[in-house]
Image (cartoon, rainbow, N blue to C red):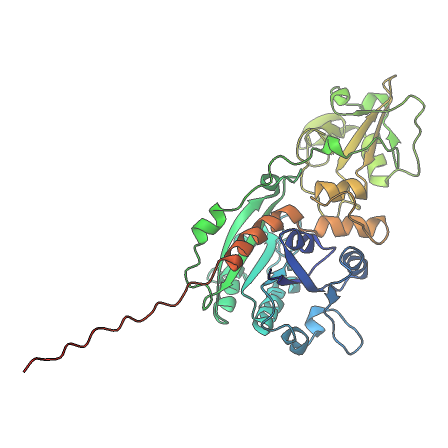
Length: 387
């Protein structure tokens, strides 16, 4: 059986690699420049080779020469790129001039060098409406991306996908780009491609893997405990005790009282299942999908786990890296490298593996279809004129 091969760019910890490999692709090489993410990728996918500049082993993609990628020319079925999204993200300040917005050009460069049959790109939904400059007639960044790929012989289609549709216990919308070599797939149907994406069905709930760990737990003053807290908190033994120091942000929010925001008065800055205001922290509903996990979670953890003793004593803590990775669609046995902050950043930047697996499954179906047989020329019988 043919082994389909892929390359991953801007790989992070390997969410796309995991999705591709689950779909039957061998990710033979990857590119990433942050060491904790490289270490995580190597730990989980030891056979995947880091694409780097041979001079100094520098893996900043802008420093990797074309020759490194051209070595894979003609052998790659898919190039994946989760190119940097911070400049497009509505979670931060969207800046057209952000140099990270130009990283799609590296994506195009690698596709040109390797000539894969397909490519997959992933980004935040802000890419759909992001303009390339401040002027009214400046084109959309997405328009520039489409033109850049068209210039090297590829068409592309895109769709905004929701992670929960693929069994991921997290509300996370992402734009996914799918491109194809026009000379090899002239009849590619965008409508049937997106319609054919299959979901694995109901995925796990947060309750299935969020634990009663007291790591970093902080006792909430009785006056600050939300009325409906018992409905959302995990039960812990009466003798359970916090382990380690609580996150300063958690301590700040759990201790705050008599706060005012937007002309409204709040007894507490903790609320359950939703944030009552932008300055609130939310105790997660363990039976519902999580809100989007972002890479700054370790800096401002606004999604918290509630814990409650039989006597009503209440605690809150951050979600732990092992819990966060499963919210992102990684399995429990996926290994994360680096310190806690490194791990949270890696997970927050990752693409949910089941989402990419579904897209890759569709492309594998096209790759596995037998090539159409060339039509035989039918020779017309020669009719001799009777004399």
